[in-house]
Length: 391
Image (cartoon, rainbow, N blue to C red; front, side, top):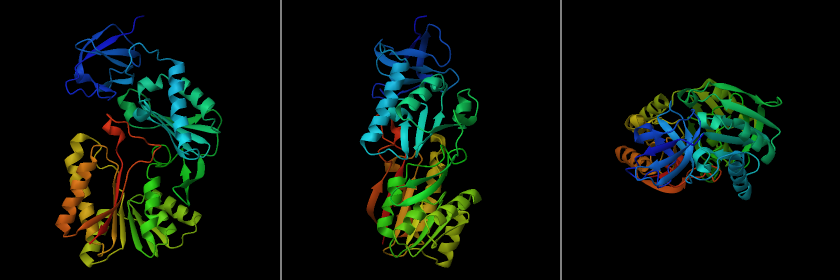
């Protein structure tokens, strides 16, 4: 059967600039028939080819492009070559232990996320089109990366929007899903690929975690939204006199406490608390810390939630700035892809102005090289981290 053709409007030249998503509202007409998940050819209204991708009529992102060439054969060899290129790139940069092996659109495999923890792979198939290539992907990863085990974490809500079930489980033989990995430099952490967040652990903060070691010596540190203790543990490794981590999740606090014990950091403690309330009370009573870390979950999960998210980010930064003495440091992060780097900086500047504080930037960070940013696809640039000296 001939490939179906999708004719689209690209009024802002977003697709021509390299963005692989084609929204339902952009489609002018469809020519030919297809089954959801099939590969279709995409052309603009002037009949210029834009590429090929898989289609899902249930999704607002109707087509996700895999290539900009309409004549290229998308088959087993194509998928294997993309996976092989992604893995060789990580190897060339020295990422061989725990790292992201495939980062969706950034590796031109939209809908696929693969994380490596020691010799185990944790995989997410996020879209119907990528699910159709599941057997090919799993075989390619087995042959190319040669893991000792694979666990599927297909429990992401986006799958329901794609018409896919939420499910988890082993691919192949069973193994102990509880592991110990190295995070950044000199810190070990417990990871459970079956029960942890996302694929089991957030690998994207590794460089930023390490950066806090440079400013932690002799400091009193408060790590807010600590999750499993990444920043707190690295602060302790850097010689902090005391470290306290806060998180609203009792489960996260329990795991962070285990991580402190694993690394033999007796001065690093954790407790369950509401960060907003804690910082408000601290600023009211005049309590201070030399370093405060803010690493909250994504407040802006959609463009429509952005303005409320900015207010939330500003509020916690404002409260933190009131609790840091002159010469202390604010470590502040955002993983909201809808909040741009410029918007993030403007928000912090507004908070500093309201708090009557001046800031000096001493470190700026983002995603590590195993989470590359594909130009033309701003969604692949999501993580922002600043270390700011407070005056």
